[in-house]
Image (cartoon, rainbow, N blue to C red; front, side, top):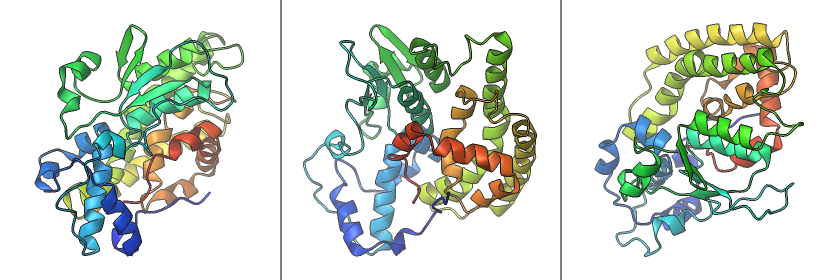
Length: 315
C-alpha cells in the first residue's frame, strides 16, 4: 500500500486555495495566536486548529490573502463536514440506548484511538467538537469532563472518563462479546497479559522513538515554520530501527503482537504510525517485512479506513 508524503502547499491549485479560504471561520488570522501555543499541545490535543493553520499557510504560499471579514458561519458549523455528530456503525442497527459521546477532533491521535475502538465494536457514538481558539478546552464544562483541559473526554450516561487508553479499554470491555474480545480478558490471564505488555511497549518504546520524526517533519515546519532538525530525525530513526527489530522478531512468532488475532495491542499503534507514514521516512518499514505486513493488515481493516477519512496526510 502506498502512503502519501508531506507535500508543499504551493503545489495546490488556486481553486483549492479558494475552497480553503471559504473554510476560514471565526478565527483571528494573525499567526501569533498559533505561535503562542506549543505545537505538541496544538496539534495533538487541539489538532483541528492545525487544519486552520495549514489553510492559512496554503493561502500565504499561494499569494492569496485570508478574507478580512470571515463568514458568519461558526467554527462548529464549519467543521460539520468533518465532525460526525452522530455516527452509527454500518453493520449495526440503532438501539434505544443513547450514543456515547467523544469530545475532541478526529485529527487528534488520541481521539483517533478512541474512535477506532468504537468503530471496531460497532458502537453508535456522538463526536462533539471542542473549540480551542474559543477557549472551550478550559471552560468549566470541559474541565469537569477532563480536569487537565485536554482531549479526548468521554461520556456514557453519568460516567465521564478521560485519557484515551483508559477510554479505549472501557469501550472494549463494555461492548465485548464472545466473538469480539480485543483485550483478551476472556481468553485467560496469559493472553490478556500479552495485550498489556505490547500496549505498554507502544507507550514506552514505540511512541518515544517515532514521535520526534513526526514532530520534526510535520509539526514543527507547519506550526513554527522551522527547518527540520536532521540530527534529531537521524537519531530517532536509529532508535526506531532498533524498536522495529524487536517487533520484527515478535511478529515472526505470531501474526499480531499479542497472538494470532488482532487485539488492542495492535490497534493502539494505529494513530501515530498513520502520521509517521506521511513523512519521508515511511520506507523504514520496508526493512522489516513482518512489521510492514502487520501494518498493512491494520490499514486494511474497515474500521481503520473509516477513521482515516478524517486524518489528513498532506500539510
